[in-house]
Length: 117
Image 1 (cartoon, rainbow, N blue to C red):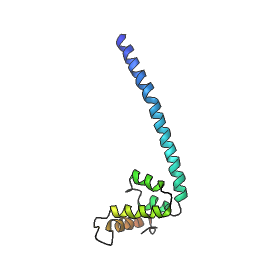
Image 2 (image 1 turned 180 degrees about the vertical axis):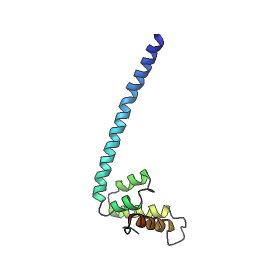
Image 3 (image 1 turned 120 degrees about the vertical axis):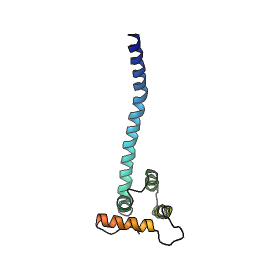
Image 4 (image 1 turned 45 degrees about the vertical axis):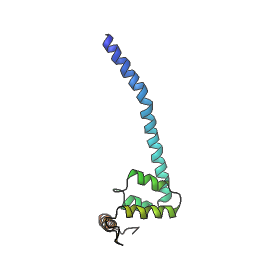
């Protein structure tokens, strides 16, 4: 009886301490998703296709947040340039073969031309 009482106390303590953190993390994730949707809607004309069609599989969550956090189109253009340059295997070449191959793959897969080259 004493042992089961201790287990009950430990279990209750863990649940009480952990539960608020889990729910607040879930709420924060919902807020982040809503904010991302709002920002993506604002960017949809110029940068949404790039984000949704060209790089959804290779952009990291940190890079996505960074792009969505930028406020000016000039900053977004610089971000995109840095994004592609960081993935260029031959920095001396004027052609980014990784970007070209990915854009060709995306065009073939989606059956349309790329918006940013």
